[in-house]
Image (cartoon, rainbow, N blue to C red; front, side, top):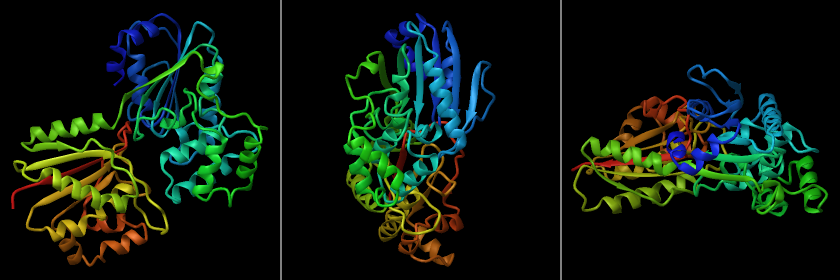
Length: 409
């Protein structure tokens, strides 16, 4: 993705004509930073990478900061301070390059005055458990941060260029990593509405106080489009879910499948979206040469009411297990994974189901899928069947990928 982006002459010329200061942050930070510094003829003054892990030693000259996800910790605060220091060290005539990927919101934190990191964590946890989508969640995160919502770019007097790997449906640059390098089109009123919708205001007095002060004009809003502090900031998405889908389609064709894709993103509550997706996939596959493979991508949500282990991908496929069994005369297998390799609290990337899953589960003494969905304990269903998908951390994050294969009866 970095190489493809820099093949654009406008970017290549911009990067090659001035000193560069690099902040890579997100689950793909290590890989993106390594790819960027490997580009010849760039004058890189400083390069910092903030991520969850680095599988291999990074090239000389990259400062590696291991941070925390999905919730920030003290390392995230240290990373936020460092990112601001890098941005503030950029002179006019130089450029701050932000290499952004999913997960950056937790990995780089700097709470606004009046709240603590503990307050931010509690807010994020409450909203996530209430089923908040990434847009609502990051609207609040941006307004409670000194580094998100364009505030990182606003602290830089030079040019800021963001290259983003999108994990967000719609590729909204405000939502990817909470948009540290771009103007924020939301306001304190939007943050207030998101907290109201997902139950945060009733439980978090410090956060509620800051939001009320923001609504009263006592705390500055995030920089809006057209704000002079972001006049020299630009951004572009260099990769996303469609790239993952294209890769899956190519692999399926190589295996001899007729391939179809669902371009519309898969969204909504996982256990509701699953059956709708299955019906759509089967309608598309009707009349196609067999075997056929249908590929899609997106990001669903989970409303947490139980204490089990699982994630949106596990719940997505568990919600269709009984429907696949009902159509047992037609051999089918489906899977859903998080492309970062981690699905919720499960520790795995996702799971697979097929026409015989329900029968195998019964032989293993497992209860009906509804029992595990009610407890948000989908991992306890798939782990005994060895139907979880383990990828490890993938050093990328472009949302979720769903695949179904249908063979002849």
